[in-house]
Image (tube, rainbow, N blue to C red; front, top):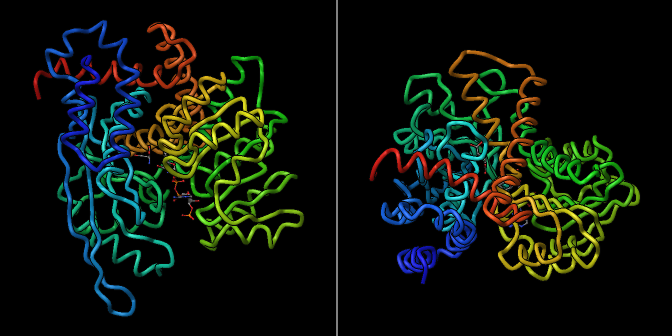
Length: 444
Ligand code: NDP
Ligand code: 2IT
């Protein structure tokens, strides 16, 4: 067994029953072999063992009362994974599937993603198994207040700065921020994704989706191609999916299908994003509604069928493991040329192997969706400097960051002998900076 295999075996033995965490660690560490070969000092310093062990994990009770007076108890999590290059930074996910394995996989990914942005942010993630679906605004508010009543003591603008993720958008960040400010008595950039009137940044809402498409555009440009006229599948219909679809269409592509967790819509003319925004952002409704409102559009129950629709480019933007081996094979068979991951770990390890064997350009999540957290770091910079940049300024910085990440992972893959393997390239480029900082700071 080599060093990587030993660390992975120990990780699985010490963290049983955490399949998503094992999956993310396997993907990351496997790609780091060429780095380990060049840096034998890392093993002596137990660098990988320290890298996969969170600096701190906080688990807490979140009690709240629904509108009918019934008391509920949810689990709360904040995993502060790595602060080598900056304060912990990463979103909060509210979804019934949330457990420690999912938060740890997201936190581990976040360390390298945040490093790739080139900005000074460490990695963390948190959330709850609370299900926001069907809850009233006052129930959401009471839940957020209870969650923050414990979380506030663990975070701070220079310590740990949470943001949104699945189930946590502008509304939730507003309630969380209100409660933080009330308890801590300070109006600081302790959360990102805030409303524009209380410290938020222009373009943060759009940033993850737009950033993903900026990277796709750059990858195509480097191959003498563009988005113009391409047919796209975009899974999900939340924050990331909506703004990825919006930007792709603005650049001349046609998004023909999207989904939510119940089923997918197919609109061969190209999806009308304004209708999706109305249903999802304003009404908080189901995507099924789209087919009832737009002539010629179809709705199909279940999500998997989306990957059987022929496309040039697939952008999975919903959740982990939405593309398995079978779906990847289907996409390849139908001629997909590029896959850009908007969600975190949306492709299984077997699915990634299918794309790579078929020569599909595969842009991995930690690089392709880094625009959201990068813009969060720009929000932090504006908060600290008491500044407010225009939409155009933030958007230009975002685009520049995404283009740089693309070239950095491309260059790292070439330098370490795995040209075109952006999974390894992103892991290597992200890891080198964190590893250098950890080595410089001693055994901590
Ligand atoms: P949202 O809550 O805004 O949207 C999530 C979307 O994914 C919804 O359409 C939801 O459908 C769908 N979805 C969630 N779980 C499942 C499931 N198990 N099966 C099918 N569909 C599902 O979240 P975001 O758009 O913010 O996040 C989407 C992904 O992007 C996540 O992986 C997140 O970690 C990642 N990400 C988000 C960033 C951000 O800035 N927000 C930054 C980088 C990555 P339904 O409404 O039916 O649940
Ligand atoms: O997965 C992610 O990068 C996010 N959910 C965004 C994190 C952030 O701090 O903006």
